[in-house]
Every structure is written in C-alpha cells, then in structure tokens.
Length: 496
Image 1 (tube, rainbow, N blue to C red):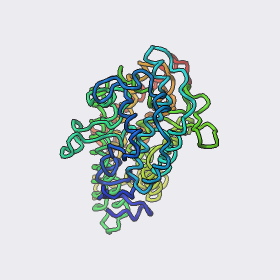
Image 2 (image 1 turned 90 degrees about the horizontal axis):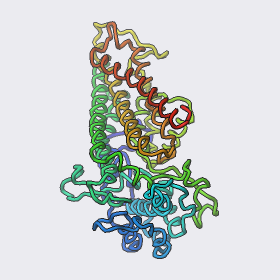
Image 3 (image 1 turned 180 degrees about the vertical axis):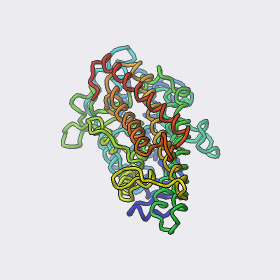
Image 4 (image 1 turned 135 degrees about the vertical axis):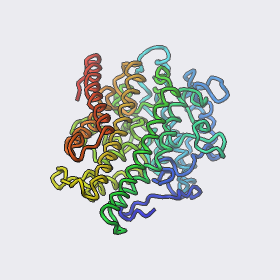
C-alpha cells in the first residue's frame, strides 16, 4: 500500500519475514503491531549460558520442577555462571530479529536479578522492600548493547521483551489461534499455557493480532481524505466511511478478546508474577535508581517498567481521533510512555498525529467549519446521510476507546487495587488516578462532540444507537468520578 502522504514512513503489506536486516517491529496492514515474523525462540549457541539460566529461572520450569526463583537462587547463579558475552553480541549486530531475541532474554534475566529479593519477601507476606541496586557487568553491558542495536531501552519493555516478542507457536501450521500460543520466557508459572501468567501475556498477543485491520483502516481514511483519485464529494465520503468502519470493526474484536482476560488470568494470581515486571522509575524498590556496572560512568539509571500502556493500538486512536488530554502531570506520564515502544511504532504515531492535523481529519469526519462548529447541511443534500454515517462511526470509534479504557480501569480495580496497597503500577504511574485521566478525557470528548454536532436532536439526529451510547457514557462518567474519589480517600492520595 502506498504511504507517500506519510512523508517517508512506509507501512508494509509484505512484512518480509526472512529479511534479517529489518527491525523485528515495523508497521503493516497484515500483522499490524505484532513483530513482522514469529519471534525467535532459541538463542545462538554462543549464548548457551543465557539459555540455560533462563530455562532454569522460572518459579516453575517447563518440566514442572521448581526453578531458581522459587528458592531465591537466581542472583547467585548469574554471578557464578554467566560470563560477559558482549563481544558475542557484536557477531549478530546486522541480524535485528536475533538482536531483539537477545534483548528480550537479557531483559528477563536483568529484571529477575534486580527484583528477586522483592519476590522472596512478597511470598512471605512482607512488603517488597528494596531490590538489588546494581546490575553486574555480565548483564548490564550486553543488555545495553542489545537495546541500542534493536531500538529499545536497556530494560524490559512490553513489545520487544515481555509480551509481543515472547510467544511461540505450538503447531507452526495452526497460526496465531490462542490455543496454539505458548510463552518463550516466564517468571512464575507462565510456561504452563493454562496459568494466569501465560493468560495475561497471551491475551495481549491475541488482542494485537487484530491490529492489522486497524492500521489498514487508518491508512484508508488518510488515502481517501487526500483524494488523489479525484473522487466526487459523496464518493470520497463513502470511501472514507468504509475506512472508519474497518477501524471500528477491528477495535470491537480487540475489546472482545480483552474481555477474555477475566477467564484466562485470575485477579488473585496477578500480583504473584507482577513483582518481576516492575520498573525502576517511581518505584520504592529502587529509591536511588540502579547502577549498571561498566555503563554510564557508574551513575545510577532509571527506566519505567513493562506495561500494557506501552501498546500502540490505543495511542494510534488517540492520535487519529485527536482526543484532547488534560494538561496534568498524569498526561506527562502518558507522553513518557510513548518512548517505551519500538521505533517504527513511535514514528508511525507521530506521522498519524501530524497528518491528522494537516489534513484536518477530525473536521472532515464530523463536518465542522474552521471554528469547530457543525456545518449546516440541508437534509436533501446528497451528502447528508453520509455525514451522519461519518459522525456516528467517529463516535463509535471513540466509544471503542472508551470501552477499552473502561475495561482497563476495571482490571486495575480488581487485579491491583483490591489485591495490594502498593501505590504505583508496573510502569511507575499512580495506580488510582492515571487510567482515569485518559478515560475521563475520551468520555468528555464524546460528550463535547455530541453536543457540537447536535447528534441527539434535529435534522442531523443520529438515532437510537447514538442515544444509547451517550447514556452509557454519562453513567460511566459519573460512576468513574465516584470510584476514583473513593479509592483516593481510602489511600490518602490526591486526584491530580
């Protein structure tokens, strides 16, 4: 698909899975934001010591036997058995999928090494206490180099490590069906596909499997908005609506898969493997950061932890739909999270934001004038029904973002707030207030648009689908405010 309107950024159809010179993560209309090929499962032979430690690391290994993390022996094993393989890393610098696999595996070892003491306290029912404040050279030097070459931070990330580059196919011929997915690496019981740890990660992969049509719909809308084919006004609008319909359909599938999390990863099990996916930034376990031995002149470094908030699907819609976010410290955290995703994903998000504003995407979709007011369109006009369709599809796309963020808030409430008093999420955001910051923003945007376009009454009324949707938004907006106030009072935190 041509993407010349996106400056120099290329969105692929053919992801060239056998080309080892390309990054593991691109953006495509076929695989969306998944890696462009199935992840590499086994490291090159030079890294046998890393592979051996990783296979012995989980609380419960693939054989079912207790692993090193079950008894707190991983740290000693790393120091005793793992050589500095930095020079071996350089052999694969031109092979970016292998480099991403090395990054993934070193990040698993690094997080386990740093957070192992916290896990051992947690299983005794004690507070997390302090993690290890240094990363030995045999971990620090390779992970920094792998991250540099593969395009990540030198700490565990959602896409390149914990989730999207961490699955294998049990049967290569069965494809990405959920029942065919297995984890490559795990901390607790995740090598058992029925475990809550496996479910937590694999549901995310199953969700992102639907991101190809999301990218395709986005590209279609921009192509039709540019109208290089010289379509008539009604033809252009009709084609644009098809792109919006593709986006809404893709997000309905994403949200339907997201709902399966309740069954596949149990709320009471989450906190037991969650310990290992915390970051350094804003966490009590690392008050002074972490010294990466032999790196950064011995000065402590700090990185955010793995978080589903680093996924690219919802940020794509935030940019495409131009959802205004409040000017708060919580929104600054959202911006910081954008740095923790593959470079091609970051570039794509920036291009979508830039061209959405350049092409006045929102104004076209909603038929707004230059002042942001609804244009008067005679009911007899050929475009009238097509504009109504654009408006309801735009609101439905926003509603899918609301649905996603509402469910994410429900997960936070049931999996975290009701299970632990720890005040921050794995990525370092405030657990009570951060998700509501974005959820309130999308609901307020829906309410504002509905009023602007007069969707509830008059000649451009959008009908019962719109009415039911907005009634739910109003109810959830009020419910969310009450729930946030309740948890803030219970935990003694501010709402901003």
